[in-house]
Amino acid sequence: LAASEWLAEITREEHAMPRMVRAARADESASTAIVPEAKPVLTRLGAPQSESDLDAAVERFKAHGRAFGGCYWDLGRELSGIVQSNLWKSRSRDGAPVYKSWESFVRAELGMSVEKARYMMGVAADFTREQAADLGVSKLALIRQAPEQARPALVARAKGQCKRKLEGIVREM
Image (tube, rainbow, N blue to C red; front, side, top):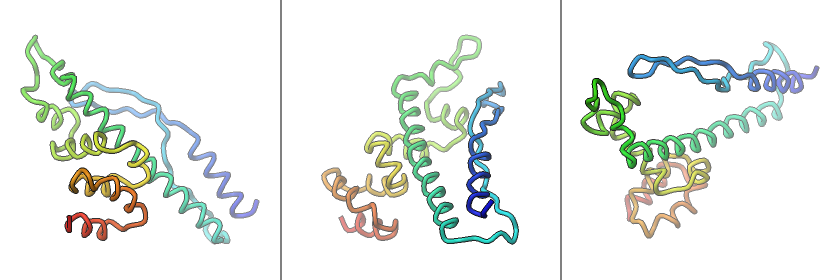
């Protein structure tokens, strides 16, 4: 096989295989899920590399980045649902609620800061999943700091902008 064909074959094999994952929850019970395991694409040492191999690797990297933005938005949406429905109050021990506030729930059950939770929920509330996938959550969090009427224009401009340039634009508003 040519190097690019060999690389493509490994990529198909490695990325197509789901894996069982066991995770411990905050209450120490276990949960099992089948999730795709992302493995780095390996090449043989000394195998000839080409720009097309690099182009394919860069495109895979960008696709993972887009998927991350969308997943981040999904997490924010899910967390918003938990908070808005007061589902977090459902956790109890001996008939008494475990958490006095959603903030304590977030820290204990989800293992994240309240600031991060608010950040995620804000991005999910103010933007679409597609915007999160296309622009990334860091840029959208910056755009959230701008006046509401300026946000649509900033979203349109943000696609080709680096984060620092966008920070400067938002700061000037």
